[in-house]
Image (cartoon, rainbow, N blue to C red; front, side, top):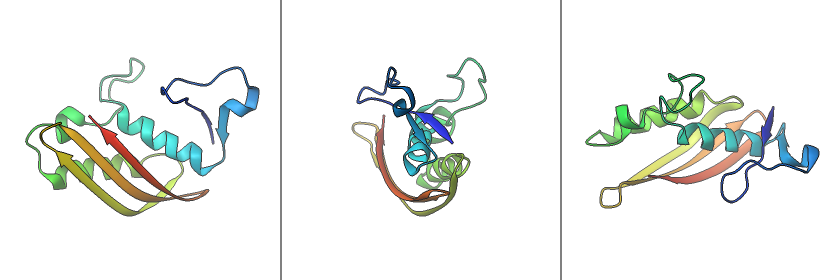
Length: 118
């Protein structure tokens, strides 16, 4: 598995040959999870059915069970993910920010992830 690294601004890294890639590593899978969760359904021109159903299942007056199920499914469908060991989420209704923390098993090892999505 090869995944191009992102810098602190979430832009792709260029100019350092193979050092610009995560190759067969937990970091590659973690970045794949993060970018898959950030992609909204309909946002990618090449496949408008691809993406996380933020509008359909997460934002607005949705139950915690529904949005957690949607996020878990999206993570489990990520290449390299074998299982989710722990999963927690917290929705701040004032700022509309969803914080997700999880521990995932990948084909390359285990990793803890934490991200805020708004």
